[in-house]
Length: 609
Image (cartoon, rainbow, N blue to C red; front, side):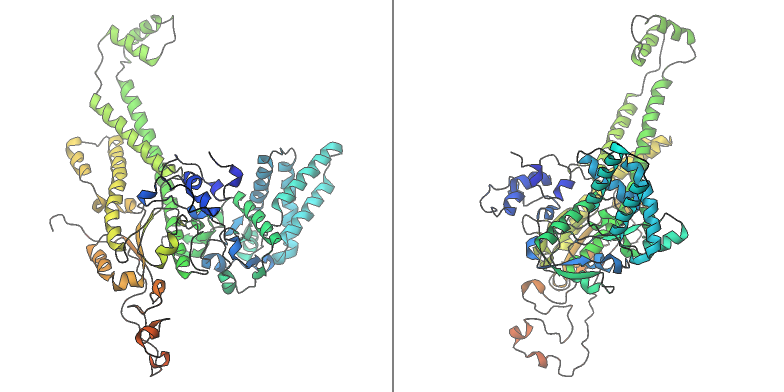
């Protein structure tokens, strides 16, 4: 029996229900996650898919970190400069930045009111006046403006000037009251990059910047406060009323649209030109890592991975959008080509036969099938190329299926932006603590040293699936251009693989990423890493170099400094800390680099080599 919707975690409510099978996060909540959240993880029935060792993505959504905090970061919008340090450093995706136009804020509030069963009659029209007044008040108060107070002021002025009377005036007052209650204490900042500078260039173009605490994932590590040089975030003791307010603000944040492209400060992400941290202002990019996992407070590994996953997501989003437009266009062109081919089979030169067919079917509706049958009975027609029709309809099915995989798939959330193969270590421990998975894409864990080798194998299978899609597109383009020749092209398409991908096709491939610590990559796993690099296979490798075996007691490792003392190194080797570097010299690093990100390797492939 399905649990009541009101009992679902708030972030789970945002996700569509899947097909009830292995990858359905709602199914997993019903059968497993809800029991763990109630402290009954050992008493519920085993998950039907437990033997597979699999669980759905993004199950970290289930978890609520409220009870592990004693303090929380409170946002002081009057001090904020929108530098982006806080939302960039947060390891728990718990403090997103957002930029919205004033009209977007009001429209979101109105939609929330109406979805709650309160239709509005005057509000949509009147908020236009409120916005004009609000912008005037902001101009008067500058970047220190208290936006919430100014919204109240603008509403009161609008009500005072309204020509409505009697019951209509009362209705407007009720609607404005609901608007203010919905926005509540949600905090907006007037900042130079998103409001003041834009308003100077074009009046009415400025946006409201906000920083919102996600009370369900924030662990209270206070890393955001450490990097805030403007005192826009301060540590405040957590109370029941504070939790209630944060939850209300987060609920409204979920209603707001993502940051619009016009507020982007990135000129060219591919070339790394612009304020790159602002890619995190996009909700989809920011939630490329969900949290709700078992990592320590302030985990630097998570911050690094989050920045990586957000960047990959930001790069792929516009490419996939353009690719979907291309697929739609190919489908439309192929359908038109089929229709034209069928129509060409009808002899339009014999108009007498057309009139006779029409006159012979006066007693019932005339369809294309009936007309074709009548014309065929009255004279010879050209036979259709059955194999061509069979091939092209099969191709249309392949393209429609490809579009479905990009836009929906079994999870109703479309194709994933990447896949991670995680070496055993800290990153695998906190990321796979059953049943909480922080990643919204495929993630797998194997032995301590095997991540690069496993990634190579998965890459081959993944690229075979990508090649199937690209083959369908290439064949469709040839058919539409009337250049397709089975004798010439079928052999090429049959053996088409990732070595023959064009640059455009490569840019559409979600990366397969091997992730591990310095021990997993530089020590016992270095042979796997070196093999991957020597193979020329374009997987990506992300090394989280902590310069120590963090997960097993802090022993020294290859990437550490010469003379470095790890937490437990002196205990194991019986050497006092002060004796490790008696000369007092600056320690030397060995030759292993601390970060590797192997992108596509450019090389010429010669099948005869």
